[in-house]
Length: 201
Image (cartoon, rainbow, N blue to C red; front, top):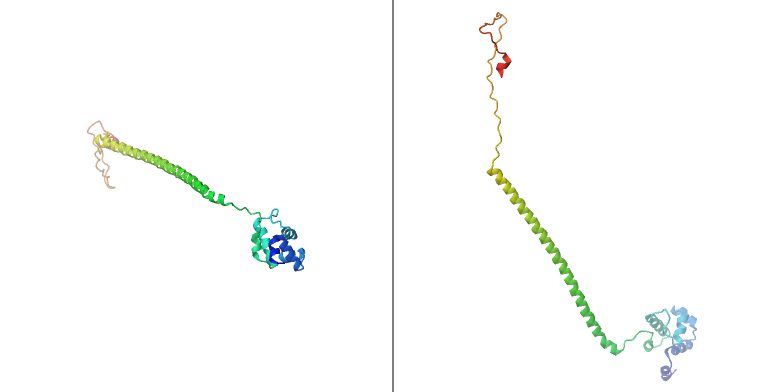
């Protein structure tokens, strides 16, 4: 195979010719490369977009097949594997979309900061009001307590004191007669005698 023939043949045809030159069947290549026979047949028929197989995988299958046949690896990049290529015009327009995205992010970021600062401000205002109410309640309690104390000091309460009974005269101790003594007879000087219990009071 000459260089001009290689340039005119497609990648699939070049792979098929190289395989046949080595007297290998598709089954032999599939067994040695661990690739599916259906994938190898599709590649040899220049079908590089396989259903349900990502383009990166198809590129890897072709690379393995090229290496196995000892062909130049530059052949791998000679075909499109269904990968999306972006035209130069679109590449130039892409930064505009990024700038627009950045301006949207700034707007959202600014709005988020406004909401957060508003929430913090409202919380601080609520706390300040509650603090002022507590201070007012404390001051009112102090005023009420000092007024009540002042009234007690200014107007002492007069509590009636009941006169304490003065201790009654304690009768003198009665001496008991001795055993040898004779009983005394009371002298009758008056007809009126007070009971002893009444005199004690």
